[in-house]
Amino acid sequence: MANNLTLFDKINDYLYAMQNLSIKDKLVFYRLLSAMISAWMWLVKAIDVLEIQEKNPVLRRILWVFSKELKSWKKLSECLELFPDSFSEAEVGIISSWEKTWKLNSVLVDLADQVEKVNSINNKLKWALMYPAFIILVVIWVVFVMMTMVVPKLIEIFDDKSKLPESTQVLIAVSNFMVNYWYIIILFFVLSIIWIVIWKTTSNWKYLFDKILLKIPIFWEVLQKIILSKFSRVFSNLISSWVSMVESLRIVSDIVWNEVYRQRILLLAEDVKSWIKINESIEGSPLFPVMMVQMIKVWEDTATLDKTILKIADFYDEQVDNTIRVLNKLLEPFIIVFLAIVVWFIAMAIMQPIMNLADTISNK
Image 1 (cartoon, rainbow, N blue to C red):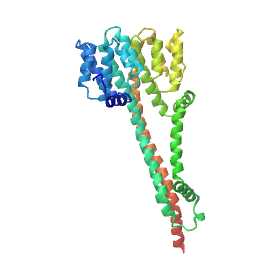
Image 2 (image 1 turned 180 degrees about the vertical axis):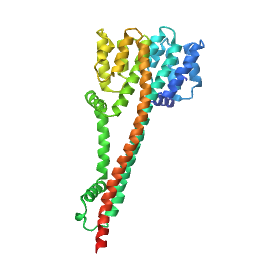
Image 3 (image 1 turned 90 degrees about the vertical axis):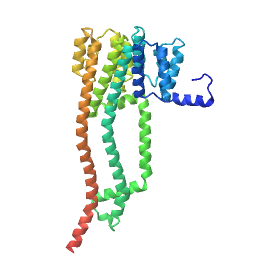
Image 4 (image 1 turned 45 degrees about the vertical axis):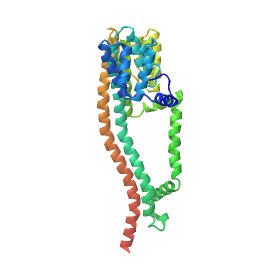
């Protein structure tokens, strides 16, 4: 890239800077850079080679900045800090520690594995929630169409609506409201979403919201295992990279995306700073299962905590897969039953007066 940039180039650079690096591109970057360093290629040379062959404009711009900063005697970890939206604090901390030992190639492979596994866990949760969310949206759309288009046409056949069954009158009232005030319903949903988004930005309300999530049956179990898996895997990689335990806990607290766990991990960091063992701090806490506490207690005494924590992460990865698989099997019949009840109520509210009318005509 030339130093004398035109206005168009500056606008392009600004737009690229607003975009985050995708997980896929980051994994390729880590693995290719590790392979080049293992082949005894200088770091600056490896970055230049990657920049030349890179087709993604976002990553190419990042590599160009890396090359410029490295030639100014900056470290790779310091280059990563320039893009906090693309590279997490945990990744920066791990690379910074291994830069001192000149074993950057090995840690890049481990870092790529960590990013891939953590991202895989997040995707599993998203896919597990996507199916029921889609079904619920379909149900809402079907009910809205029936209430605004189907029900008003069917109700027109009845002259005296005051003599209709209560269920039918409720259905008519709901239908009339949705037909005449549909914009209020849409506005209500939009304002609710905006309110929740703003509500979650405040620390106190975010804590309350995340605490409510941890109280939801079944979902709490999946969420806990995902959080503990991410916590264990990243924490293991940090302490095995010679990052201090207190600093590792502080970094991990920001990646669990749950305010309840974040505050508890920060409290754990304060306990460790006061020379309290991890197992003693988390023992009795409902956020950490007894099995995890006992495993940490045994291996903490043998000075192999990093390997133990990694085994715990692998265990919870497998548990997440099994729980999500069971959750999908449980949600499917529940959603079908819920949809059947909604359709049955609407159908009965419509058909009951029609059947009563037919019986009246038949008796006459």
